[in-house]
Structures are given as C-alpha cells and as structure tokens.
Image 1 (cartoon, rainbow, N blue to C red):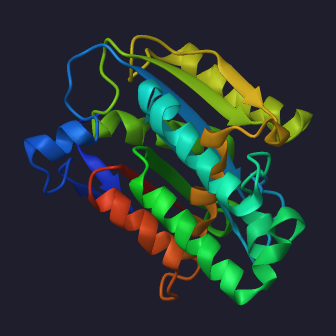
Image 2: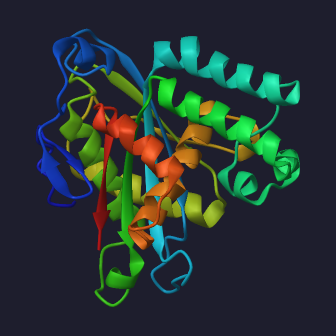
Length: 270
C-alpha cells in the first residue's frame, strides 16, 4: 500500500492546499463537502494511455487514471437528463457515446465536427455540461518516462491508490456514506490488472472513504454510461498538461476552474 495518510488536505498537481480552497459554508455544502447525512456516491473511473512500463509511447508517455465522483441523487436527477438532453439536441437521440478520441478525430458520430460551425456549437455545449454538472473529478498522472527504469510498483496500483487518496483527502465521502465503483471495461487483460490492483488495495487496508470497500464493477463503452463518459472526457487533458505544461488547453482550463472551486484534485507521479 502506498504511503498515503488519508489526511484532510487536498492536492492539486502535487502541491498541498487547504481543502476546500476559498470556499464559504454555502459553497462547501453545494460541493457536497462536510455534510453529515448518510449519502450514496457513485465513482466512475477511466484511463488514458497505456499502463505498461515496458513500452512508452513517445507522443503520450503518461498514464492517466481519472475518477468522477457524484452523489447518486444528483446523478439520477441532473447528470443523466442533462447529458441526454445534449445528445438529443445535437443528434436527435441519446444513443451517442461521448468518446474523447472520436471527438478529437471527428470520427463516427462526430464526423459532423469537421464542419467548424458545428464543432463550435458542440464544444460550447460540452463545456457548459462539464462546468455546470455537480460532479467531482480526481486524477493521477504517472509519467512513465521517469518510472520505467525505477522498478516502480505496478502503474495501476499506484494510480488507483493515489486517486482514492485524493478523494479521502477532500473529505467528500463521509464515514457513514456508501459508494459504488464502476470502471470502463478495456479488455480481459486490462480489466484483470485493474481488478488485481483494487483487490490488493482493498484487502490490505481499511477503506478510507465511506463505510466499506464496494465491489468493483465493469461496464462496456457501448453501455453508454454517463459517468464513464465524463471520466473519459476528463482524463486526457491532465496527461497533456504534464507532457506540455506551457501549451494552452481549453479543456484542461475548464476542468481546472472546476477544481479550484473545490470540485476535485489531481496529482502527478514520476
């Protein structure tokens, strides 16, 4: 198990900060921090990049694990209808899966984004969705260039421990709260590696968030799970920021503004 104290401070990009930052009591309540009522949370995790240390992609030499955390009532009452409304408005139905790689390449259902005007409308709608929906995002970026020669612990293990640590430090999920954990299925080998990392962690220590460790569930991309789509959309921008911190990135800036309001945290390892 990593040396994480499950403490009370949040971390943004490796720097300790009081959490919530600059928030008054009303803002903290809106972000779901500090409430003593029993609540149920949903945690959706997705990744960007390859978790193997034996091969490093020169164009994307990092591994990102992102976790979207949302209260169940907010997920049912706000996230699902808002995402469905966006899809119906743009495509006429809710069957489209928001997938960051297809959006970047304007492929499949997103071929319409090759038209500049359509892309502008879509990106503005997506930006509003990410900014307005009441979800928290936690992410860990592992720079494989710095770990490949160091005999480090498995990447999945380090990333998963780190994301759980960030959630615990935020003080978001109360000791009496329950939570569910859903990951996107990426194939038998990848699912097995993630399940192994989670099993090792949950079997070694007491759960630092909520009442107990939940069972890890997997869902396929074709299942069109809204929470996994949000985790997918949020993952890659963190990696790009680590690879090229001086390059502007509208999506990362949008997510960072959300974090600065107390809606999550991230860190880099490596």
